[in-house]
Length: 270
Image 1 (cartoon, rainbow, N blue to C red):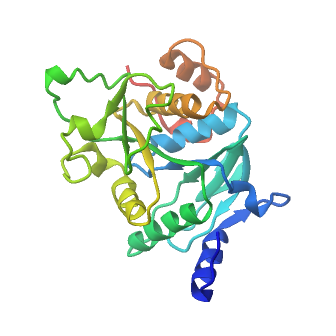
Image 2: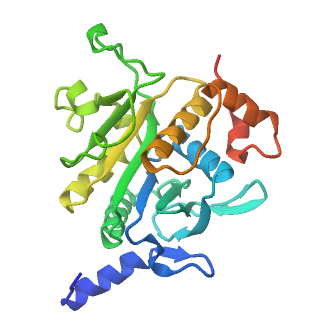
């Protein structure tokens, strides 16, 4: 990248500095990696998925996302101090966990900052995940099964999902006849920052791929496990699952000391 304009260079440096690495972690550790981002959905199931992945795989915390747009929080997760926005990495996959709420009046600034940060770091791919609280009786001819279907959308034409090993993929834009991002009567309106982030990303020429589930009341942990499987299938992060999701969730919850702290607030739907 060649930047000659001084003001543009200063903005570029600012975006890079939004990553605060852990001691001993190189500043360029994000370059060329695959980025998986929380959609900040209402039920935070994607963060439950990230907490599970980081507890059972080789993901290591590499630093924090620094911004003045998020509420400042400090959490105790299984004896580990956690902040509101953290990076974890395994091999070439980076997870950005966003736990904090966006401060009042700073939503637009946050979206712009995040998109420019993504652009400045030249990620190989960007995946936004979550589960939507949007419900509707689908036309029976569409044959939707929310227990196994993965809904997807990309803000640019690319083969990210077509070239993946994911099964039971449902193209959201085709499902809603080209109105997925235009109409407020779609699951996208209940997926946290997804709609706005993809809008700003399109303006900046940044590709963001969205994979999401349709959630059901009381099914947060099952959905978290499902989202973990999606990340594993797309990026091969070494997640090994045996039995069905309900059995896995019950097995995790049986050992309270090892279960992710965030999981302890939920139960398994019947």
